[in-house]
Image 1 (cartoon, helix red, strand yellow):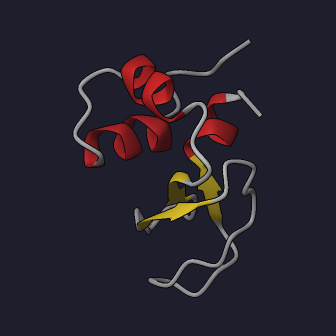
Image 2: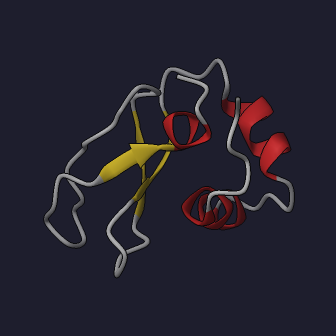
Length: 76
């Protein structure tokens, strides 16, 4: 089951210019790098990372808390 309502996923889609999370996921489902967001509560840094990234380094807060939008949505 996909999770299209996760607050960080909604924030990521909006930061990428999408009003609809489903459109965001459809556009990036087959990309070799995809938008990712820091999962730390006090950080919304975004970057382009691997589609299966679950613990990437956040350049803004220094934590290993970057997660790809596809992972957040449960697609990977």
